[in-house]
Image 1 (cartoon, rainbow, N blue to C red):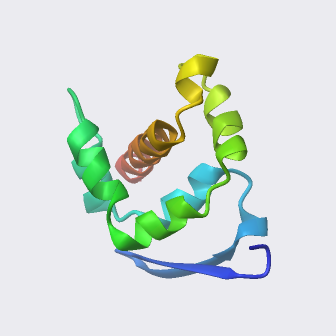
Image 2: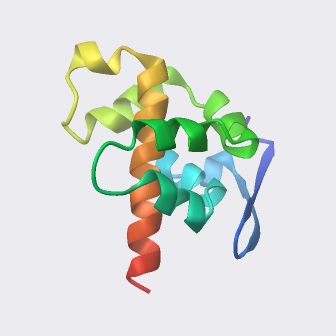
Length: 112
């Protein structure tokens, strides 16, 4: 995976990065989600359905499929919001990372 380029189309254009260039998983996902998708999946109240829909978008799902479960667990554990039993569920972890990434994207664009 280190040699492969990941290309994601974002509202602002196209971005190419290697997996080695990513300091964390959020930076990879942030390159893949457009602002409108981030806003859709990050709002007050329950976002589970919207997060699942964004995670199912082919270009995002393709990136999620490449995530190593152990690395994703470690990334999410740093938030301290989930216990070990909760972090054992990789499918839920994928939803969590999408939700976090959408919130980060939305917040970044709001501060511009």
